[in-house]
Structure formats: C-alpha cells, structure tokens
Length: 397
Image (cartoon, rainbow, N blue to C red; front, side, top):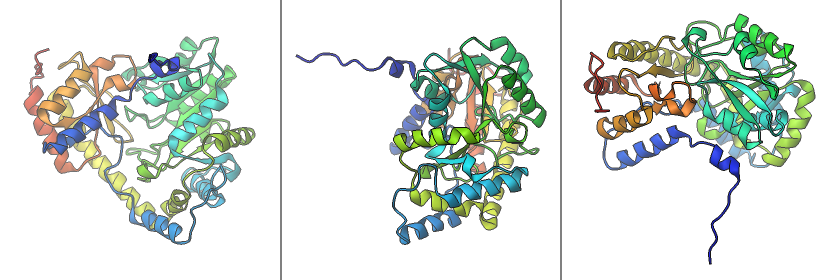
C-alpha cells in the first residue's frame, strides 16, 4: 500500500515563478511552428560579450577547473572592489566582497544570516518574487508593503514607520527595481537608511540592474550606508545569465559567517565563470556593455509611449533595468488569463503582475524589452489588434 507523501509546509507556501510557466509555454508553441514575440524574460537578448567568452575558454585551456575558495577567487574580489572605486568613488575592501552563484546565491546567504524563524523583512509590493520566497525557505517572512506611483513603487521612511512590526528585522529594497525600473536617489537611500537604523534593523539593497540606468546616475546605497548589505550580479549589465555568477557586499564582521554558510551550501562557484568575469571589467568589454545599455534605452523610448498610446497606464517611466510595469485595468481584471490569452491567441509573451506580489497584481503586466526593435514593433502591432486604440476589452471577460 502506498501512502501519500508529506512535504514540508514551506513548499506549499512558495508560489511558482509564473514567468517561467509563460516561457515554457512560449517555447512549446514555438516548437509547433508559432511565431512568438518574447517580452517576458528578465534576460538580456545579447549573447555574452566575446571578450568574456574568450576569457572563459582560456581559463578552461589553463586547466582552471578545480574548486575555489567559498568567497571567490581573490582576483575577482579585487576587480569588483576596483569597480566600486571607479564607478562610485567608494573604497570597498575586497574582504567585504563575496562572489556567489548568481544573485540568488547572495539572497540565500543574506536570508540565512539575518533571519530567525518568524522574523520578517519589509519589501515593496510589487517586487521581485523570489526575495520573499528565499526568506520563507529559512522560516522568515516577506512583509509586503503596498506601493504605488506616489512613491514611484519604492519604500520610504513613512512606509517603514507605518508597517514596521515587532518581528521586523529589516528592509529589502531594489534600485533599479524589478518590475518597475524605478531608481532610488541618494536622498531616498539616505531616508531609508536612517529609518532602518533608527529601528536597529538591517538594510538590504538589490542593485543587480546597476549599469543599466538610463537618465541619471544610479547611486549605490554604500555611498550613504557602509553597513548595508548589497546584492549584485553578472547576469544583467554584464550579460552572463547562464554563467550563474553574482556577488554581495557585507559589513566586515558578517563575511566570515556567510563564508561558513557558503562552504556548506555551495562549496564554491563555477571556476571558469569567475575567470571569465574578470574580462567584464576591461575597457573594451565595458564599451560593448555600455553600447548595449544604450540599445535598451532606445527600446524603452519606443515601447513606453507605444504602450501608453494603446491605453496601458505607466505613471512612472522606468529609469533603469529593462522592464515596463503597466496598468492593464482598462482591459482586464485577471492578468494571468490576459497573459495566457495574449500568448496563445496572439503570439506575444508577457508576464502577469501576479508574479510580483498582491497589490493590484491582477491589473498589471510586466513588459520586458529584451528583444530587437523589429520584434518590439511586431509586438505593438499585435497588441493594437487586441486592445485597440480605444482601450475596449478584447477577451470577452
């Protein structure tokens, strides 16, 4: 007799990553011969820059295929330190930097370090969904704070004061943010830092879209708070998604504890990827990456007004990353059904707002402009046939 299996309760409370479901279905439709315009994935469409690829090949040729230290190779930690000096005029000791298996590895280490069972961390709703799921994995809780256009979908000291709870241990913010693309200014980062320190909490800032700021400088929280925890990645600006490499910056006294965790959880990161990433900081490679950033800006400047003309609401123009978070309430009250219909019937893949939280999530969509201008134009043509210039409902809801 077979008994039903019992799995940990945390698994039931961790929601699926809906964008992955959209991508899987889009791939299946393409295999059937359908033409799909991809506006769902949070992944640059450019292949990893050639100098980075060549550095990876050279690493393999030298036989660098063994474990490295759990905090990363010294050369890469030094290169990241130099990057903070050149980009932000910050003196960040290499000893405060840990290389991680993607930004996800950094999230896991920070969650495990800071959270006791039952602790909570304030975060914006909408926001990147995996943040709260990592907290749940270590028996903590993401305390979602509804945010709107009046704060550009970001947390501030007023919201922290209102939503801080007895079990809250800190705040997790993002700049540029996913899914909205909004950026925190230096003053806003200072405001967050003061509010968190006044409550003896931790401040964690996701900076993985740094380098993809369009309209003004994107300051690091480390410029105003050297005790903040910072998560970054080689996936977005550096275009190394499949290499699975990220980093974190932590207070000096936290690194040894996180290195102990990393030794147990990861042993080390991909050795080849670490040596490849060194080439990402070379001037010739940076020129390639900056040119790609300019391409993303051009795509934003096309897609944003096009969506607005179709009737989608975008009250806060994205200042970075490669997303537009659009209010689709003129067309739907079920973003999940809307997205699947758009994919199945019209060949356009976008992400439902339900992926990013609960606050008005059924009324929003995320458009990712990680495809060519030609494909964006096709997507807009297809959307126009669906929703029309007058914004009438198109799906018979």
